[in-house]
Image (cartoon, rainbow, N blue to C red; front, side, top):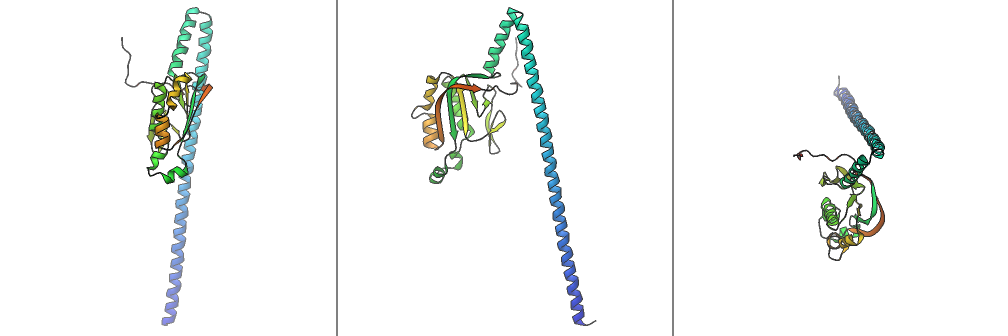
Length: 240
């Protein structure tokens, strides 16, 4: 065989080999993508199943609470002493945040600084957004001002509520909340106006220092949903 023929054969073999390698790479990539898609679909299916089980459990809990309330009503109506006990239970449940309530108070909204402030301010980006510390400070300020009940973005604040920052998210009662933040507080309005005083936490720190957007107004008909779940204590025990 001549050198020219050998070169042609070698060229054809290289071409075939190159095509084979390309086909193999494409098949491998397609298989990888297919496996990845399958994994994502499996995860979605698991999430949907967990969500479905949660909804079913929550509905059963709601039904059980409604049935219990009906039994309490029936028993209490037939006995004055039991009626008094029922009233005490309702009072304590209200204090614990386990009942829906309404009343007068204040509504505060806090949202991240706008784009212009972010560009012009020589501060860290975290200092231009609403953080868990901001919410915690506002809740404490409201409690000190006489708030009887508080919720944040619909999450009822109770004695065991945690307000924390985890994995770039603000968590309240273990649930994610994000800006804008709406804080409702039921209580004596005139007493809670101290939150909005010049030089106070809301006016000075959130507005002047962090450049956050805030509003503060009276609301005579705040409706607050109960805490979903049951407060539990792991270490605290009763004793006689």
